[in-house]
Length: 364
Image (cartoon, rainbow, N blue to C red; front, side):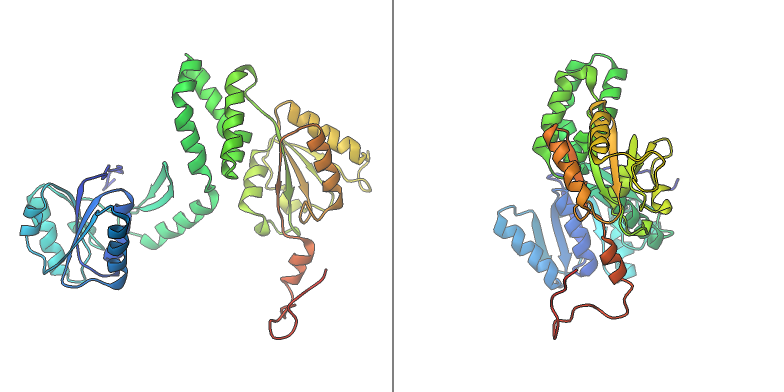
């Protein structure tokens, strides 16, 4: 391991950036978001950097200082104490000189595209503050790192930040409630894999907080069940939403229609119970009322219930009856949209069905 992953607290601390181009803009934005005090030294500044400084001044933060001048070692002395120096110019000799000066003064330094001259490097970041994930190849494969980050961005809900913040607010309360570390661990595992998490992911923070409070008040029954009406789309698993896939892989029990494709069903959690609710093909056809009642009973027992329907749940007529039953019994539920069969078919058409020059509407 060439570099040890660490997280640096830059709040209110001095950072020197040498260079005023597009690369400097990216680094300035990054350390500025970390609440650093940023000084940028360059002969001239690109428009984006000038705009960042202007917005900062207008906001009253005064955290960005632009110095129009060639770099000189005196900048490190005059701005002391500096905790980080970043060299971003396209002059390799100048970047190396900046690195030498920083290291001579025991200051952490990053040379863009120069890991051999850096004592620290910037990872690719998946930011769900306060949750942060850093990915790095040590400079060997930046394109691969970028691809990995893209994959993680899709897998980790943006609402993870809400969930982590909620957990932080309740951390001491949970600690006071459960004296045993194992009990606390079990409690949080239930919270992070159940309806509280799903409400936070959906930006329903008030409801997530209410459910978490209820779980604390009745900690003998931490698991709170919920029903997820999930659109399985037209049959292609690549057309599932990220949320649909996540819920399918967390489900305890799945009720599915006969038209849901085998490829989609293969993505369901392996140890989840599967219940076929088709009427025509099923050896034991069930009524709509029985389907709704069984889902409600399963959720009441604390299970995460996924109701998989082909296409979109709100287009399928039977989903309205299931929603009515869930609301009547006050069973928590969420609707996860899917691509309709019609929309999926349209995507294979050679020509668009609408054209702003002629036809702007379509009726299905």
